[in-house]
Amino acid sequence: MNWGLFESFCEMLESIPTKAVLRAAEAERKMVEDDLDHKRTERDPYVISVLSFCNFLSLAVCGVHASMAALPIEHRMFYGKVVQRLVDAGELPLGAAECFNNSFAPILSNAGGPSGNFTTDNY
Image (cartoon, rainbow, N blue to C red; front, side, top):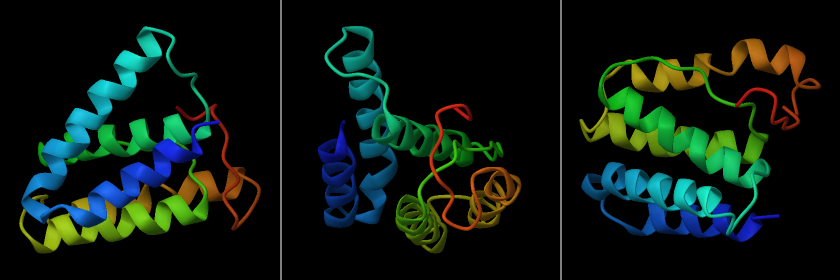
């Protein structure tokens, strides 16, 4: 499992200036996809979480509203704070935070209740 990937991704996002978050997320997405393509990692819940969030950010910049993979509550809470930080800084459109929060509404009812147990079926 790639627990370390998620942890290091979170640490990076917390430690860099807000203006650098979108570029860093795009770089992370490319690196993880390359690792998957070259079989250096496997697609597990942590990889799916990071990729899903990076993809959400790339689309949100363009004003495209996309759903996300079902994520554990801890991941959603962290990512939600990052999205709000980016919206507050003007890096994402105003509706991005609402889109992020709404992308989980239908998933929660199908993902095992409020805990939002993670499945790879939604990615």
